[in-house]
Image (cartoon, rainbow, N blue to C red; front, side, top):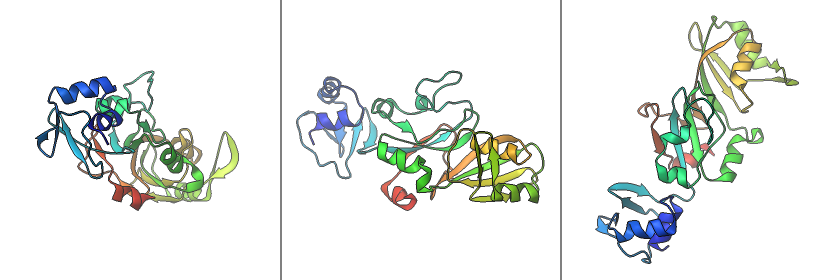
Length: 232
């Protein structure tokens, strides 16, 4: 692929902007100056630098973000900053979208990608991709509550019971839930239907992909192909 097209496909601006970056000496490959927009490069495993920052070629792109509280999973946030503001400009430019949504006060693992098919596969309940949530409840979590969540609770928009794949008491007020669906405010509504209230909510895993302990709130990281295959 031509160097100008590589930068364009990775979100570094219009073709004219990308050509300007290359001509200005801002781009390096394998430590060497790359100043020919029409030069061809193999994109397999390619890592290039723009203004001294290394960028791996990703087509499509998939990243994980440790979503902090007080952010919205929306391109047009209404009350709080968008999670998109936590990503570098090239990722925003190339059109990454959150895979599902976390409420503004919910923290934890959020995936973002520009692959529409992947978004569908990860969010469609037919594919049964489990999501793990850590809950701190207002009232103590007891065995009856856990049993209700496993048996199924009725939400106000559907007469059919909604069941947790797994439910485990982790502390006096702590609860771990595993769900395969992603309905609106689902965890909060299920906990309320079971007679309690969510005080804080954190998503710790999606499929086999867990939020790394060293990824601080507001930080992002590329998801490697091996991680994607393990989760699929």
